[in-house]
Amino acid sequence: MTNDIRAIAPAAHGASGEIPIPGDKSISHRSVMLSALGITPVHITNFLHAADCMSTAACMEALGARVEFQRDDELTVTGNGLHGLREPATFLDAGNSGTTLRLLMGLLAPQPFFATFTGDASLHRRPMGRVAKPLRSMGAAIFGREQGSKLPLALLPAEKQLTAISYDSPVASAQVKSAILLAGLYAKGTTTVTEPFRSRDHTENMLKAFGVQLDIGEKSVTLHPPKEMKAPESIEVPGDISSAAYWLVLGSILAGSDLLLKNVGINPTRTGILDVLSDMGADIAVENVRRSGGEAAADLRVRAAKLTGTKFGADIMPRLIDEIPVIAVAALFAEGDTVITGAGELRVKETDRLQAIYDQYNKVAPGSIELLEDGLIIHGGKALQDATCFSYDDHRIAMSLAILGYAGSGIHIENADCIAISYPTFYETLAKL
Ligand code: S3P
Image (cartoon, rainbow, N blue to C red; front, side, top):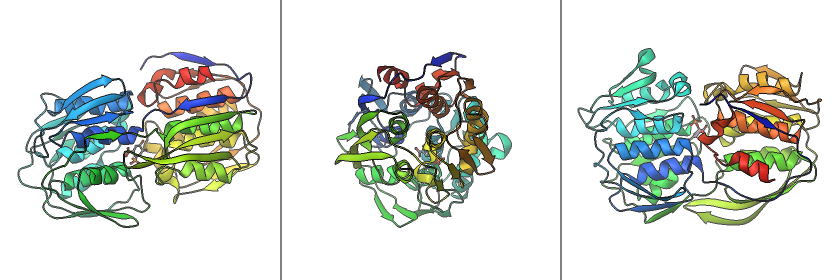
C-alpha cells in the first residue's frame, strides 16, 4: 500500500442522485471458485473488479482454470471438473483477502497435490487455526507458523480421501463454514456445520446453483458430496450491500440528501444494517425487489432523517459484521448513545476494527467513543473537527472515515488508497455527489 494522504472537504449540500452499486465481494469470490470446478464455461457479470476478488481469480488460474475477462466486471471461467484442479507452480497469493485464503484452504485440503499460501502483512496476522483445526480433523495435513495457525501455510497432498465431520463452530463465520463445506465436497460421508448464529449463506446458495444437494437447518447445513459440479451457463452478481452501506449512512446523516442505490443484494443474512438504521429512525425504502443470480436484490432509496442511538449485540452481528465501522459513523450523528456488544470478531478483521474506531474517530469527535472488550459505546451529537486519521490499510476504515469527514467537518486520511480492496471507484463516486 502507498502512504498517500487524501483530504476530504465537508459537503457543501445534501447528496442526491443514483449510485450503481458494484458487485458483491463475497459472491464474486464464490462465483470464480465454484465455476473452476465445472467443465463448461460460466459467464459471470457484475463481478467485483477489486483487489480481493482479483486475488481469487489469479489463484484459480494458478490452479488450472481458464479465466478470461471480457470487461473489468465480466469474465468467463472454465474449469476442468470437480477433480480437475492442478498443483500450482508457486505460492498462491491471497493478498489482503481472508475469504480467498480460508475458502481455498478448504477447497485444497482434499486435493492430491501440494499447495502453499502467502498474503499481505495484514493477512499474516489473522487467525487461520479456526479453519485449519476442523480441516485437520477431516484428515488434512496443514502446516504454518504459530502451530499451523498463521501464514505462510502449506497443505501437503492428501494421502487418502478426507472424512466428513459434523462441526460445531465456536464462531459464526461464513469463511469457516464455507471452508469446511468446500472440503466436504470431496469427503467420505455427509459434512455438517453448525454455527452459534447463522452467517451469510452465499456458499450454500451457489453450491445449490451447481447442483449440490444441501439440507439447510436454522443454524446448520449438511452437504451431500456430489459426483460432479453442474455449472450454470451464467451468474449475475448482485451489488454489494456492504458497499451500499456507506451511501445508506451518508444519505441518512447528511441534511438534504436523497439517494437511489441501484441493484443492491438484500440476502436476509446480510441486511442487518437496514434493521439497525431503521431502528435509529432512518428513512430507507426497498424498491423493485427481484432475483439476481439466485440471490434477492433491490434498489434502496435513502433520504436524510433524524437518527437516535440504538443498542444491538451478538445475535445480529453476522448480518452486519462488515458494516460496524460505518454504523459507528451514523451513531456519531445520532442523538443519544449507541451501544454495540458481541462484536469481538472485529478485532481479527483486516485490522483490529474496534481499536481503530476508538483511536481514529475520537480524533474527529473527541470524547465520543468508549472501547469495550467486545464492542463500543458511542455518544452521538458531539462537536466534530477536521483531523488526520489513519486507515491502518483497512478499506472499510478508510471509507467510513471518508463518510465521517464528508458529512462532518472534513478529514485527512492516511493510506487512503486501500479502498481498492473492495471499492475502487469509491472516491470517484463520492466526488460526483
Ligand atoms: C465473508 C465473511 C465474513 C466477512 C468477510 C467476508 C465471506 O468474515 O467479514 O468480509 O465472504 O465469507 P467471517 O466469516 O470471518 O465472519
